[in-house]
Image (cartoon, rainbow, N blue to C red; front, side):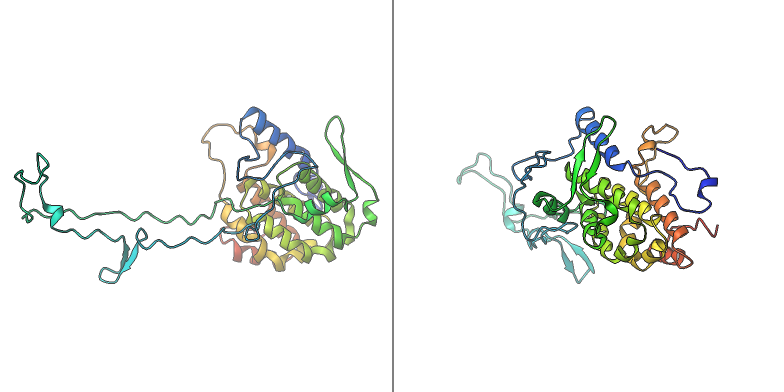
Length: 337
């Protein structure tokens, strides 16, 4: 990572960190998790998608109702097991079983009809079935659906993108078939942004690295495309996957400093971008007095969100802070303070 000193940030033209190598760093992290830590990146199974880690991968058909960031199918009500609202006590409670005479009758021993048994009535108080109601889980941090049906995957498998992987010794790069400056940003940049929620290689590497390459060479072509980038960014954030959110945040940091007036152009869309950041803003790693050796990877959501919000405020103009404060009440200004 390349740190930028304070003197170099006087003009606020660069983020505090260099995010251009995010694609290669993500591939290295996947290898570490899969081969060293034993945490497989892709979940394979009978009901899972066919993930072969190949550019010739053909995934299984995806249901029409399954969409990225969706809540899933609605839960079917179960009147017998679900709690109901009791008007007498004004609260929700479970339905208890009605006790009858058989519940108070003593067990017969030996168990046959001629054996003496207890009476069908008793003075003992019957036990009611008490089932405490557990606190409901909102599921705000729950990972939502992220089906592999991005526009980037569809265009790449169809051969409509002028890119290919250039394998190098230190890290891979993208070999562009045409000059990046000659690309139609209104057409290609939203496609690359839609691929930011990909988790399978080589789609993710191509989408992430291609996005950074286009932002680096875009210049004045990026500003008119801002409205078309909001929906892909919002869709990627709504998946609630930490690995996807980390990539989107690093792309947002690079997007803000890629040209003039881009930060101001993002202010009207804070209501679409910031709600998910408000949820994960306090998702930090608390290790006490220990040392976290993977800070250089910058994958801690809380710190990354704070960096992104500060960049949005610095480049968003005079209305940026009040709009960030409206969506994230716990955020404190880095300019006014």
